[in-house]
Image (cartoon, rainbow, N blue to C red):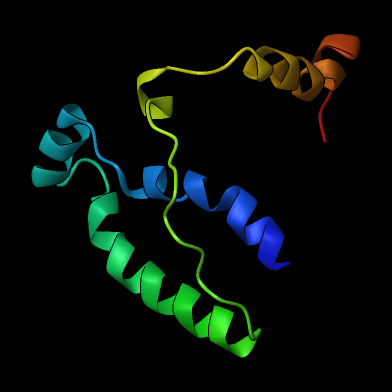
Length: 94
């Protein structure tokens, strides 16, 4: 579990990164200020990790750019998988 946390921890900073547009929208109460959610999230994660006897991984790397549309080639494959049912059964309703 600790290794999995370390392997995935670099994706967490982008949860709270705000673009210039999002910052303006949040200032006008049109969007959520995700940056303001970071402190409560950290508190909850720290408590959860402590209860699970796991340590918070060091911030050795982080992913950036996803919110601006910068993605790796892996996204296309993942989207194809996610869209399979809709393409195989047009008009499908759950």
